[in-house]
Figure 1 (cartoon, rainbow, N blue to C red):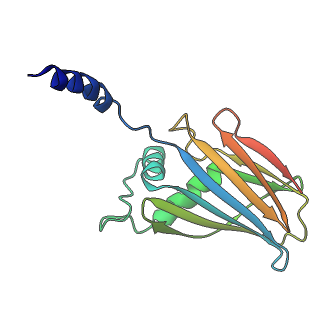
Figure 2: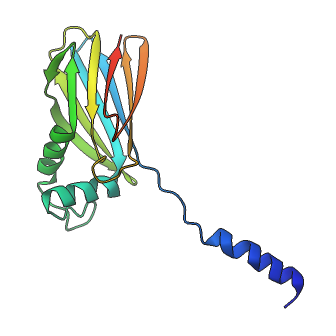
Length: 165
């Protein structure tokens, strides 16, 4: 073997031994719609991460996007989201309605809504989605109220934040 080939192999082999780093990030978008008097929430998470978390938490096998997918999987999504996501509108805890979900590639989008919100001055978000199973999980919160945009980055150690408008 020539010296050039040996040097090239010694350089390439260590590079191949590194695996790509997986990012653990969810995005929660919150928008106050004054004409509807509602707070609309969209959450997107990686499908394999949410599936793993729910399967472990509830000892089930969702098998998302397969022929064996559980027919009542929304029950588990609702239970999980109610346990991991808490919202206070102007200091008052509010429950959200689960509108539904959709799959898009390797993401799951969840659609939620809080009804009968006459005005919104602040919203406190506690987001523990996936942090129990993925310690490096980060949950980005982006909000829009009128023309004001605010954001928060939450994680396992800091899972609560307040957005003031």
